[in-house]
Length: 72
Image (cartoon, rainbow, N blue to C red; front, side, top):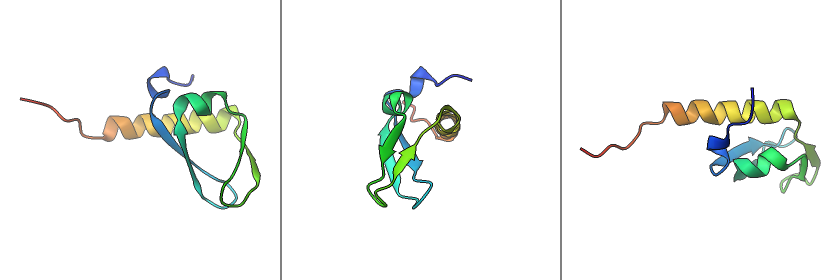
């Protein structure tokens, strides 16, 4: 599975595995990031490709499940 380009401009939420604090960034940021420093616990968190696959898949499912606004 690849990282969907449809989510590159969408805000995604990743929870710190140490403290649970949410990191909210665009999908394009997650695509290129390998690690970040958590603002909650100050630990360095590695984001591997498997983590990215799970994150993008989760948000793709949420986008499909969200009701769409239609005009008509």
